[in-house]
Image (cartoon, rainbow, N blue to C red; front, top):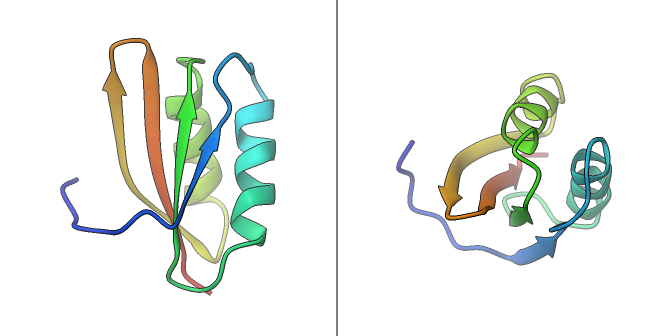
Length: 81
């Protein structure tokens, strides 16, 4: 995925393990307005599939991109409604 987007807020969940990255991502997304983008920084490799699965099964959110940057996993989620 290579979409252009502006990050509204960054959520740092480095050091947290499953299910906390998803739990904290959901909480942060709930506080955003429609169209805003949350950047999630995690160190749990499982967050790649966990956040992907959560976004796919959750209405009102869209996973824009995921990237691995050395030992940090970056996730970009847009609130769509």
